[in-house]
Image (cartoon, rainbow, N blue to C red; front, side, top):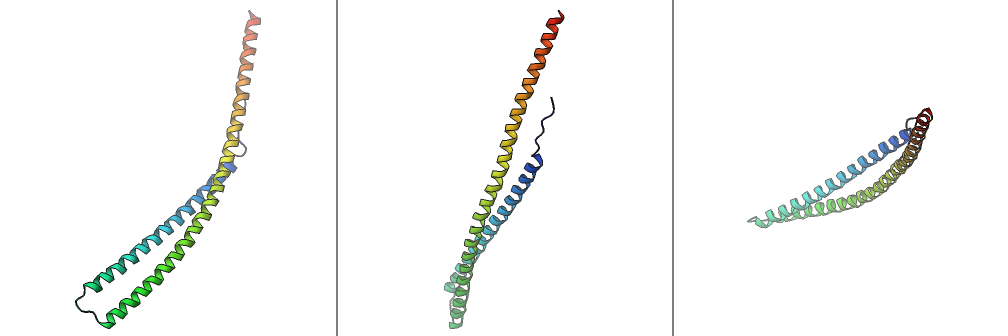
Length: 144
């Protein structure tokens, strides 16, 4: 009986590598999203700390209030920019997830095909083994 050979093995390995590349891209996008969340939290914390410091000050000048207002507006603008970036990143995560699902589906298809061919090969192998055992038994029986 000849050894089992799956002719699409290299293709399956290539598809697995492609799927892994897409997984790495998805992980990068998730890291980018986490970084945006971290930046947003840091900005909110800094703004809260500035407000607290302003309220705790014993004397506040008009210049201080104007400076704080400018800082608050700049922070709001940065938070809007971050929100837009998070939406954009979320869309890219969804798109990358769809690409990854497709790549994994391609790999699973080849794996199922390999399993089917291996099952067929095993049946043929067992059939051949049974046939050889039967022939050996009949040869031994005729010799007696």
